[in-house]
Length: 353
Image (cartoon, rainbow, N blue to C red; front, top):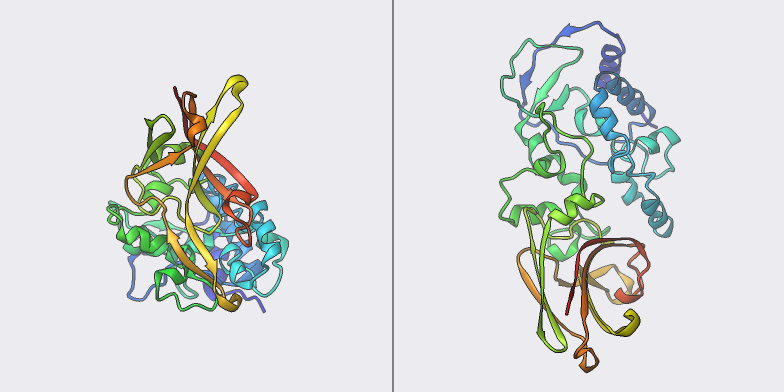
């Protein structure tokens, strides 16, 4: 049974009071304050409070609506994948305010990851926020605010952006379905917050709630530096380096990969020969079908040079090269070359004569 918690009832009453304001003390985080987490299952009460939040925070609301967080449950690619593997495990993150065992109510599903999912995390607490310069106690607000430095770090994202395969302990890297937080901790940018890239600050020092990520061509094309050269009549060396990326590229779910392709073409631009490499996590099924086993992870974590040979027929012909960021419709049971794509975003391309 979905429930309304005391803090949600109080906040909803305060935020629904229109222009009425109460003086609430803005306090530092108490020890043990929770960070955002999946599987809240607060249902329609969360939807009502979220709408009350939106009435005051109009700019943030406008950005959040249409973001990947807001569309986490209704996004078509997710829905198609969920139809193949309808696991409650998936719903805990993609529709965290719903009961993971049930199809969510339309309003709960449409909200996806709401404002309240990240900012109202304690049943008896206040609105969670980041510390800011010049914060003082006694500021005028319709609700209490608790500021915790961890909310500005990867801790705020960890619960939904790193997790093991269902039935695995997650103690080993190869048991993780998503390992973004561990990748960030091991990167040269581990002291840089996730929000610094995905919630960039505008001229008014307000963090964007668009949550720009891998669906942004501008962000993705700026994230990799590419150079290509012909090293023999039949072979090409493609050098790639991530730029300002605090995790492996690509990161996230099992549906993402970078395709490095080269094609020799002749008269009338007909392809004579081609070669491809896929930078991703490569899995195989465990014996007896008990989950997947990681056999190779060749995603970008630093500069890498790939050499691709197109065969003798390529000699004397121009070679076109291309780097594509691809989302696979579903990885199960398909070779890389045969996979059906949801999206193929070109990051860089060129022709070598």
